[in-house]
Image 1 (cartoon, rainbow, N blue to C red):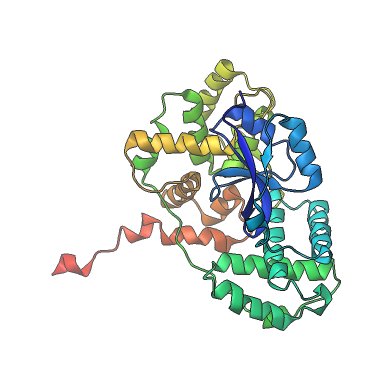
Image 2 (cartoon, rainbow, N blue to C red):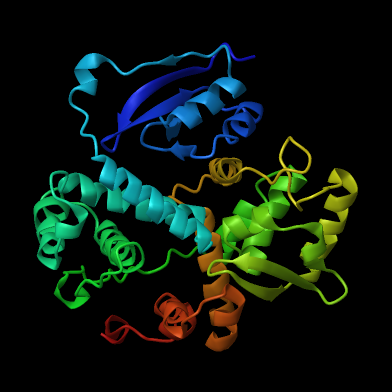
Length: 362
């Protein structure tokens, strides 16, 4: 069953990692995920894990017959390596983030950002780096490479946190340049488009997953983390536990969705998680959930680049258009700040549709 699987060392974002290639297969994915540092890379189109002795040893325990093709000597000579001081500092920073229970995605983002900064100053000791070095990094690395404003912010946040916690030194953040926040409008679907997407699948499980995201304004990670006990059918509520920001919240459950869920329970009998993949007791795979949406879009003929988060945006906007108070929408979405929720007022048609264009009066 492992014939189509290959592994080799590659250079990814300036670091030597091991890339694992195979056609989509849930069994292989579940096995690969047992590697501690493994993550999916869209750009490399492969599963990547850190090429450390411990991880490679673990890999061969999982896949004893699949040899890792080593990096060619010509490429290896071009790979920029970090001094041991900076490698140890990165490990210390990662341990700190884990001990503070940061999300895995945040840990990876911060460590990658700090690694890029350290690589830029390979020859400079950590203790010698100053505020002016951060400013120079922004100018000579981030701006010259035309990297995104979000990456620039991530680097500044990572550097600030690293020096405050691991080096016990405060950088003067006022001197460090940050990009202006982009004011992007959320992408919203019409109710007709939402209905078409939700009704596209004949598979009840797929239909219910997409319907639950829209009807409750869930993030995709929140959906696949749901457990049967989180459904309070007597009060028509769903309890979202330890969502973004480590916060619990409750959202109302549509009676129509509740009926669908009852039929789903009888047919699929979930054990640990409300929606499970091919392996009982394991949550539904996030990439598989994205494919469910992609298949629905293909069936409906909708060509917009719709993502699962568009359903959450549409939920909030449609609530606002139906007259729901913005403060309640903030609570339902789990936003810490009302300013985050206020962005939906810019795409709501409730007020805009009553405005008459002067063209109509010509």
